Length: 305
Ligand code: MG
Image 1 (tube, protein in one colour):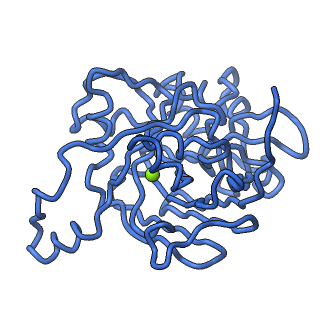
Image 2 (image 1 turned 60 degrees about the vertical axis):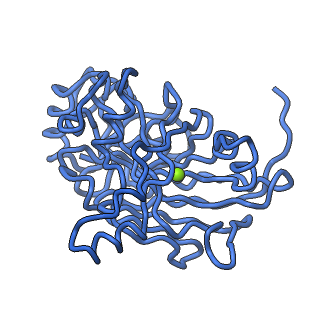
Image 3 (image 1 turned 180 degrees about the horizontal axis):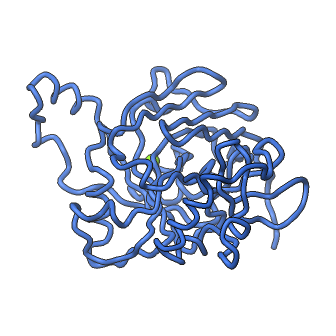
């Protein structure tokens, strides 16, 4: 099941909808009368509602065409910071594994994942504008990532049961301001937390359709040119292991979002380095999920509130 947050037509309130086989959006509240009208509400309601929705969506037809709807991030405003994993793919590790017949050079790998967060105000949806940070910085970069959305919370979740806690998967773009990222005492947080710098979407594909999240191809295209292209099987820390580590001593809650790291091919590491400019279009594609497209626009400047 693909579940999205959408606005029908030019106005109206955001609501949760399931994408039907005819590429129309069926409102959750029509599929199951009395169901919550938000994706967070659906997740909170638990597996009984997820199952009923999935069954009802199979025969749904004739809703709002995707082309006539405006999609927001599937969870437009997460309740908590989005959890992020830094440096979770290693091209070198993958090559080493292949060359050694499947055994990696363990000593080169970190024992635990690098973790940081992006605040809820960074989240934007499909086709939303991503702000170029000039004059604060010229070093705007892309990062395609598989995002896991927690369905059942829990603390001290063991890796072998972790995927049972995942509601579904979407695409995240961990947009980064590189010079800011590296100039705050080794803490990446500031350079990862500019407004609009976490596009999410276009929808959540429920976990029953992606039983193994370590088999998905991820790609980034900038103005049509491929920049990143790798499989999630090259993650150093699997989704299950990440959930295990995050939940150690800290309860994960329904609706929490975890973005799981990006493969090689980001702009600042290219030779010569490449950074995004206003007008550039990023298209992030993850197999079995879809395409998340966002355009870079000039920074709107100071704002008083
Ligand atoms: Mg990242």
